[in-house]
Length: 247
Image (cartoon, rainbow, N blue to C red):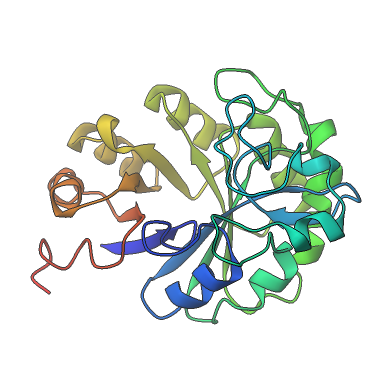
């Protein structure tokens, strides 16, 4: 089994920041970040739709408004979780990932409130310009890249724009996730912890796909994943596999 650092091990470092990625680089087999556009279309690394705590957002920074309305200066000045870290652009973060570590890039939104879980989300045509910018930002990345998303439109656009870059289907409903993975020729299924069992893993493996489980926070979660036969865990903390693998 392997470990992917969720937002750069968000349990021990300020999520989705350059500092988190640097700290995770020698403690994980893969590093996962979320991306969306800033006002000029440049992909930046951030999870919530807003910089403040309005709506479903958590108030991760001291700035305000939607990320896709913010300019570079606003994001450079934003303080992520009182850490002194700013909201970085994807290209600069990609340069921090060493060649031996997989870089997992979740396509979060192309700049639309419609990209929320429970909604169909924007179609591939709306995603394509942003995915093209993501591909450009990753062009010089020395690490192997995987593009993932909960949204069909994002995966369809990724399949068109970067057909040689592996894709992963994120899901909440595993039946839909398996279908999504098949429709968009995904290498892996990223499934929620509470839905993972041996039957799901066996199904995915028969289709030639690996299963990575989110979000794993302790050794008991990790043991459940191991017992189900999962290939990897997406975790907020380093070392969650140490006990179950005998490390």
